[in-house]
Length: 410
Image (cartoon, rainbow, N blue to C red; front, side):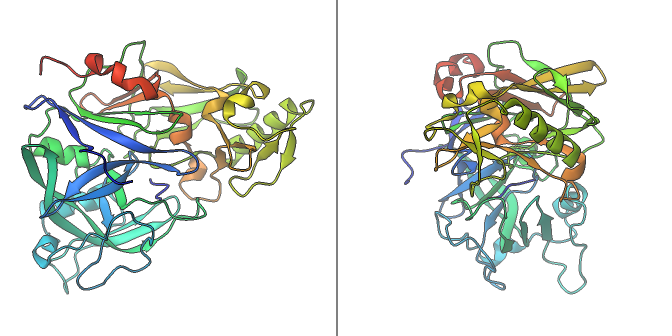
C-alpha cells in the first residue's frame, strides 16, 4: 500500500555474512520530509544496473518503471534517478498459467485474469492509496552479494498513475515489495534458499536514512513490544486499536484495524479519529502562541513567532499520542511522541503529519501507520511466527548495534 512515490558510493547491499542462515542488510536513503520515502538500492539485470526502490511493507510485488517493448512507458515518472528498466523479450515470458502468476492473483485481489489473447504474459494492475501501476511480470537476475545472485520475478511497470500525496513524484525507480504474500521480495529469497527465515526489520532515522534487515538477525537491545499479526488480513496488522491523546481516548472514536506500512509517508486515520484529534490539538494550542497557517505541505499547520528549524523547536507545545492495540494475547501500546506525528516544512511551519483517510475506500476503515510514526523505532515483521514487534532505537546509530543484532556466529 504505497505512498509511491547521488551517485552510488560503494556497494549499498551487504550480506552479513554468507551462508544459509544469513542476514541481509540494505542501507536506506531518504526521509519523511521533504523526500517522502526511504529507498534501498538493488542491482538488477544483465549487465547489472542499480535501481532505487521505495521500501514498502504494504505491497507484495516489486516493480520498476519500465520501458516495455510493446507498450513503452505511459505516464512514467520523469524524475527516476536511472534509465527505465528495459527488458528483453525473454525476460517477459512469465506465463499467465505459471504458479507465481497464480500467487500474484491470490496476493493481489483484482489482478487481471489470464486472457486468451495473450497467455504468455502475466499482467498486474495495482491500485495504491494514491497512484496506480500496471504492467507485466518480468524475470531477471538480481544481485544478492559479492558472490551470489538469483532469478527474481518482479513487475515491469509500463503504465503509471502518479500519487497525489506529494506535489511531485519522488526520485525512485520503483517499489520494493516487502509484504506478506508469496510474490514478495523476502518470500522469493526464502524460496530460493538465500535466507532461512522470513523476518524483516527496519529502522528509519528521524534525522534521515536508516537500515533494512532481512533474515536471521538478532533483536536489538531493549524491551521489544510484541503483538500477534492478524491472519485474516493480507497486511501487517496487530489488530484493532484506539487512539489516545495525552492518555485519554478520543471521544466517539471506535477501535479500527491498525496496519504498519512503510510505503506510506504519513499516518492515516478514519474521519472520526482524525476530526477528534484535530479538535484535541486545537484545544491544546488555544492558549499557545502558535497560529494556524496555510502550508502547501499538509492540511493542518501552525506557525510560531519565528520559523521553526526542526520539530525539537515546537514539540513541547503538543501532547503525546498512543495506540492501544487489542489482540488475542491482551493489549499492546505504541507510544507516539510529537516528533512522530509532526513535521517542520521548508517554510518553518509545524504540520500535523496524520491525515484523514475517509475519502479512500480502504483507509476509511484503517489506522495506517506510516513512516513518520515509525521514525526511530526498530520495527520487526516476523513472518515465521506471525508476530510484529517494535522498540525505541536511535536509528542514526545502528552501526553501534550491529554487533548485537547481526549474529557473529553465522
